[in-house]
Image (cartoon, rainbow, N blue to C red; front, side, top):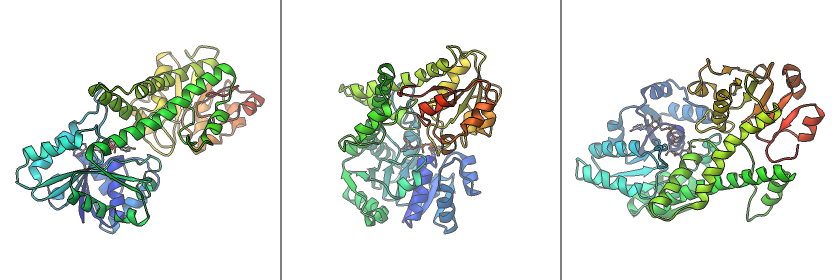
Length: 437
Ligand SMILES: NC(=O)c1ccc[n+]([C@@H]2O[C@H](COP(=O)([O-])OP(=O)(O)OC[C@H]3O[C@@H](n4cnc5c(N)ncnc54)[C@H](O)[C@@H]3O)[C@@H](O)[C@H]2O)c1
């Protein structure tokens, strides 16, 4: 089967390469010429474990190719996946301009029966709107069906998540389209992946409700951690004991500097907006957003605490910039808020990240922040080190060496990697999240 995936970002590239690995003939299309040229040279535009191998293997087998030309790709494909970005519109909703632009382009091109599959995260009602846009503007009198197929992959584990998902959600009114898309995902049927087949609106809702629920767990444990700090309780023990209750589950109960990434911040915003639009407010989600914004800012207070209240003119090394380990994605990363605030208050900032420094440079140039390719070099002569992302290489820093290099042994551990007692013994001024120090 011939498939076009439009939008070759984190989702489109993983999905395109994954579908090619299932044996489909896939063309990944993107309007970003540089990205397509890089991919055609075998370069992956972002860091994602296992993706390079998956892409190269399928390019070699001639099942996967890249193009900026939408028309020929769509003409020869039965199934077209939409994987373009749906960022925040800046007013709480989702910016659907890329989806709209693409739908109108598809209306011009489509010359035969096609199944349009939406992988982009879109508010409830969008898939029906896409079908309407195409039907109202199509050049040829052909039938088009729409399927909502939200994506649940996690950056950093995207390949594994795509190839072995917890579930596949398919929403559509068309039995014909559902039969075709089930055929696309046949390899997942064979490994007994659960499929949830439903209508368009339900599939769209499942994606937002899932992300909002995970974000809720994070904001919940962050608030509990903050209270633990006041009362002398240890949030690690609290989270562990809570997680042992099968009804709660241990995942997403790790306190930290607040959630970031390309999904949770914008999806919780868009979900809350949907609630307001339909006069059915999502008060819990609204609170999750507020708690998260405050949590990111709160982290600056922790840095001040290890520096006797003042960051002005102090040298601070920020280790870990991506919003989580194993990705170069810095969208909405807590490190952005932290570094921005530290600079605002007159600190001198050194940074290190194993993969995300180029991305960070686009926000904070080398004239604002000093970039180091080694965490110890970043920490040299620093008054404080702040660990923001729990990359493996930051989980086991040589603390003796770090202390020697720093001008003042102060460590702010926003991921609770180190043990407060050990840090005290080593003579560090130490701050973490929700544990007695
Ligand atoms: N990143 C994730 O972990 C993740 C997980 C699940 C769902 N999603 C959702 O998937 C969607 C894509 O996310 P992403 O992180 O891959 O975005 P991205 O920004 O990495 O990629 C989007 C790509 O679409 C391209 N594009 C935009 N308009 C286009 C057009 N008209 N024609 C061709 N190409 C076009 C852009 O150039 C870009 O390369 C979003 O709706 C997001 O919410 C993302």
